Length: 448
Image (cartoon, rainbow, N blue to C red):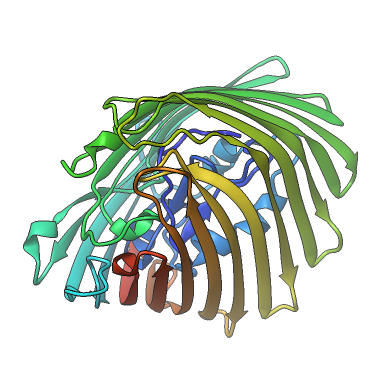
């Protein structure tokens, strides 16, 4: 399991970017990047500036999984040197873009009572840069920066840095491909944290630096990744989650046929918290995975494995429970015809707890998309997840449900307009922690 992003679970019932690749056998234990509509549209890079569907971030990743082929890593896919760049600065190719998002949120503080309503304005801008040092070696840099203005609650105003922000250097030594990376982001939306309630802000900066090695032997590929992740939460109520983690992720992939790949993936990690509230932990997980393109229009992926997480004792959360259990996920992506696509994914994993050592998460997500014309697309999503905390002094068992609809209009080759609605409901065994939220978002983007 490749535990390399944030050390708590960031989640949204219909907006989680689940990076479930063969390199992360446990699904998403540590790195999920959920985005509500505003954050998703503010992720400004040449790979995502077109406003497709804001709920793409959780469910449509099933299709992305199927492009994970022999010797390919998620990070190398994220940096496509063939993408269009619109001007040059010496040897460096550049692409710039901007967006303006406005949203209405009827419960910014995720509360059952005392709900706070607000209008949020989120302008943002981004740049992608590529320096192709040689045919095999290149340096890329992408960053998206935005600002959120809360019309009625200005105390929540703040900067955001897109989760796609990254510096990446790729090079080859013979048949071995090497990538050095530094990924960074700054997010504030409390809905990004699956277990959180009664809070209008969760400002967190995460930085992940590491190296990846891959060796492609045609029908067999070997890869090894190392990542060091730091997380800082800029809120006195939650800064006990400040932490750092080191993770090692080896993987073996075998190409069984033209359309099927399978292998074994493993992860070893060590997590340390700055304060004596959450318990430090060591983790090891391993298991098989398979990806299959069953037909031109149907693809399937699955993974299963066993995870052991051992936690230290003495943290003031009062939790002494460890993880010794299985994880797994299965996803199906279906191109119904030239106009309609659908995908479904379901699974179980273990995510870092907010007040406990860990939270067991069981989820299912479904999306369907309709390309109505060459300029207009519509899509809808449904999701459900159960969150069950380990045996801490303060623990919770909750269910979250989501449903959404979005419309995207490509006005010109450079301009996109979008409109979306998202409903989120949380039902908790602690009645004061339940809530529902309605979010309406309108977005405009321009790529220079």
